[in-house]
Figure 1 (cartoon, rainbow, N blue to C red):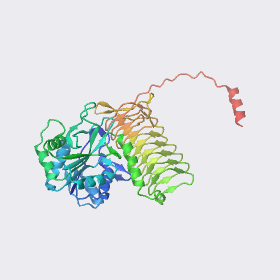
Figure 2 (cartoon, rainbow, N blue to C red):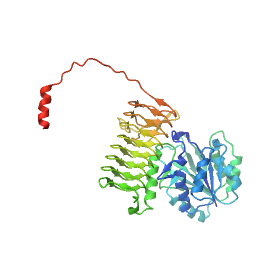
Figure 3 (cartoon, rainbow, N blue to C red):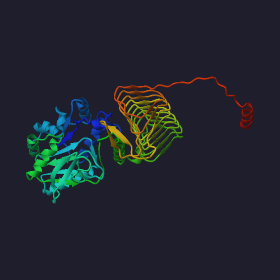
Figure 4 (spheres, helix red, strand yellow):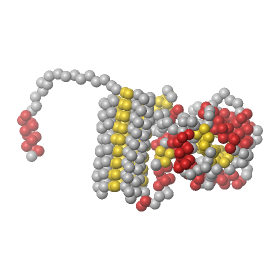
Length: 443
């Protein structure tokens, strides 16, 4: 059996996050977490599909994990999954194939369910599906009475869904060449070549069964999905580590610091006097949690400085991020970002309604009533800047001091504001008697 891992896409909906597959979680890129889950479930013989933009990084990951898998560059990313499978076809025979997205993260138990279904031999293939209550920008399944797929409709638009079942990119076919053949013959005017091919297979009598999954699932389609994903990966990782081994012996933690709940603290971390870490929390290697800082329900990457009197709540913080006297709540902060003293992120509307985020020119409901800022890499935020809920700041952009930022900023921008000072003669007089009385009381 071949296992095809898809990691070539460049999702525009995720901007300013550049590559979700390589985004670090608990010290590992997301793709590595997915590969390790598959290995644990007994799958191997991997074929990895990437893009020109991330080929070098995946070659390094292959070497790090001691894998012998071929890494193929998908030449035409506009062909999506169909292009990925066809690009990999020279490496695929008539054997079974499992197709998995590197960023459709699920509870690993679903793979055991797939193995059990495979033994039944009552289908030509399987597709994992999830019942959703809110619209999700993916492929929706239309099933017949026997539970086999009749058709897949890609991104039908809210209100046009044929069912409440969304396709998760965990697909299995008993004969890989059947899929390849239908992909090569499929025709469509929409961005749904793969879905068209599978629908044609169903039309011609192929029995592709929908396997319903009720466990954890998070596809990283929008930036705020990161906030749910890190917590799942945290609990999955912590569950494999004994409680007395989750805090490294090579970490330096002041006896006056407070650590509560489930935490993973890596080598080289320093937690200074009167800092508070309230789990679930991950603190990456060589990070400093300074005096009076509070970190709760958050992921902090490697080589970060969470400076004095800073509070980080329910956020994902990448590697090499520096803060000082800040509040960062419900935010996704890219690698190498710095916050000047007093800079804060707003995370709650005055009316406490869900926070919309502008994605590709359109407002998208985040379905969260708390959401802070989303930054790319190497962003600089000046002292006393205030960032409104749901704002995105692009890679390598600088935000000047004292600004109230209420709109998205593209990559490589320098944002400043204008202030008009009014200077007049001071005619006010201090009440010396009142000051003297106050001084006596203070004695």
